[in-house]
Length: 149
Image (cartoon, rainbow, N blue to C red; front, side, top):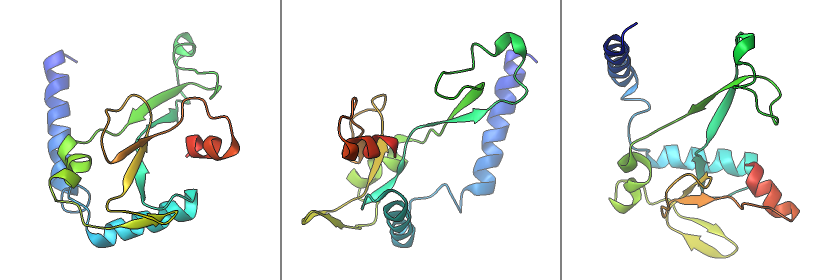
């Protein structure tokens, strides 16, 4: 496949994904959406106000060619994986708070009230008011749990 054909196919694929999923997934969250996210993440991770985690996912590549296994295998996974990472536009997730597009959904932690939720991320993401980075070298159990989530 030529480079141009690959680019054109990718463009068309993106256009159709937008057309199919715009009304359901490609919109700003409603108050109900944010309430559901808060409840789900607090139940699973114990973190109030967490909207999500921005990180990559390793997808096991069962049919990886033997010649490529070493390039696609990390020690912590032990099998070849392909890394998938969700990418969104700046204004959809991080900028929505500063632009006043996010619902005002406050939450309380240790007696402190916070106006907007946050996303967990790691060191590769820029500094935003709505992102919280994990500790580089967690030493106690509380920080280890935070890093795992």
